[in-house]
Structures are given as C-alpha cells and as structure tokens.
Length: 160
Image (cartoon, rainbow, N blue to C red):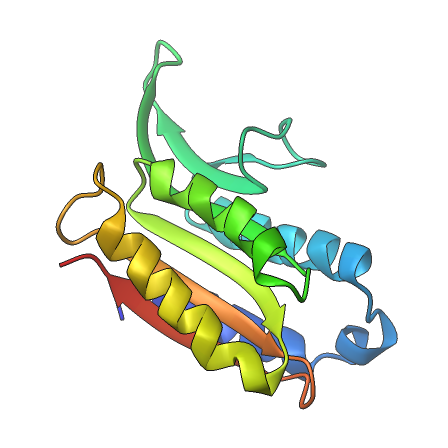
C-alpha cells in the first residue's frame, strides 16, 4: 500500500473505533460521515474536494483534485464511490463508474454479508482485468463492511 491507501485505511479504522460509528449506524448517515472523513483527509493534503457539502458533487461521491493557477484541472489523486446495497447489482453500477476514472486511486466502499465477500472480490477482480480501457497498474482500493461483524476489510487490487 502507498501512503494515501495507508492513510485511508487508518481513517476507516479510527472511524470504526469512534463513538459515532455505532451510534450513527445507517447507510445515509455513514455515507455522509465517510465523505466528510475523506474530504478532511484530502483537505489535509491540500487537494480541492468535490463532494456534497464541500464543493458541489461530480460524477463520483467524492473526488480529490488539483488545478493550476488558471483553474484548469491538472490531477485527480482519488475518486470514491460508496454503495450500501447488499446486492451486487447495486454495487456493480457504482463500481463501473470507477473503471472510467482517470485517477491515481479509485476507492469503492460497500457492505457485504460474509458469505458474499469472496463473490464481490471475484467480481471486482474480473471487472478490473476485463475493462478494455483500463491501464496496467490502475489501483483500486476496496473497503468492504462485513455486515455481521460490522468491521471493515481492506483489499487492494491492481490491473495487470
């Protein structure tokens, strides 16, 4: 894992230990909490942030980006999608948006029943490798909330 991926994992682990974690349990509430958490992390790195509540949303739930003095987009270090649907069809819709992204890091946050985690990971791997417009070395960080233990699992995937 690189520094950004390590910081994201640590942020999630700290969130998981926080009192807000269980008190604010709920898909919509957690999405807002996670967007805020990652927006603050990006802000600490001096990135511009696009997400509802900061600068308007873009195609993704959250984007870290840089721009030059003229305001032109120069770099996108991170795009994030968060989907709490327990069915792969809902998760797949949002994940496919990440395949399109020309970003250094693509982050997918979702929830799965323990019996489905391996199926979801197999899907992500297949989708990353099959997508014809992908580039060798494209990085995807998958954060899966285990619906039984309510603990986050972290998986890093890279296109061959």
